[in-house]
Length: 310
Image 1 (cartoon, rainbow, N blue to C red):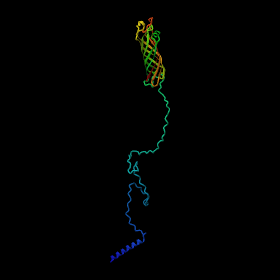
Image 2: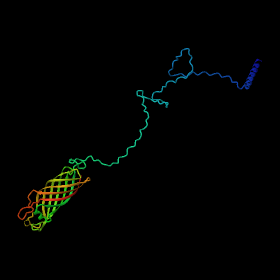
Image 3: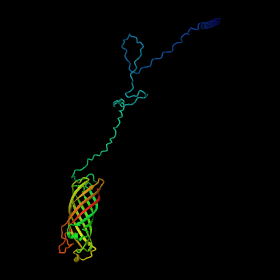
Image 4: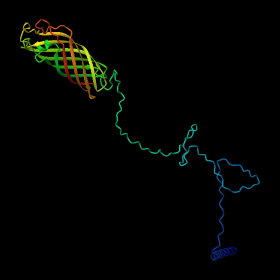
């Protein structure tokens, strides 16, 4: 009986509570029991001792951030620290600087004047502008030659003979050089009575020292002197020596001497003019006069030549 009464009372209480909640919507339900408090995290860094005394109550405040344990040289933008050698100093960071301004180069020099600094002195013993260093020239030329003795002029029908020569010159751009020359002449001869008696051929080989007055200039005059061998042969002789007084051949020692003028182009071309006197220093039996005396065979030459030097 008592059990039924308790059930009726509990049912009535629940019904009354439900009506009360429906009638007062602003009524909040009773708070739920608080969960167990979570203990604060344990600090691993150094702590600052409390200096406010034992009776002071700590008040909540913003705690200072713990000092950074990131090693020197670590990159803060990455999650992993940069391993550095503690024995080495930290890297020096150079501030960025702006590049230097671009300076335009000066305009090119348009002056084409060539300054020659290796021009030798007037009597220098080397010519730096020549490949040989001294001047080596080869010339081929021709001209005319004649005898100075009257008897020989009367023997040669035209009084002059044709001449050709070949010359090798060493030291054309030095104060003193050397000329080595081959020379040939040819002229018609006649007897003492005027009859034609063949051709007189002269062959000469000689060497001469040459003194250049302006050795390093384009135009240079010069003088020369030397010694040589000379031979005369009569070809196609029509009369005997007893009838004409003309021998068939003769060998002579002669001394050439003379003056010349030379032009030397910078490219190597040369032109040469010279006059020569050749004195015969030995007795000649080539021509005998009617009284038995022999004629002198001294000769003169006027010639020109063209050639090349290096």
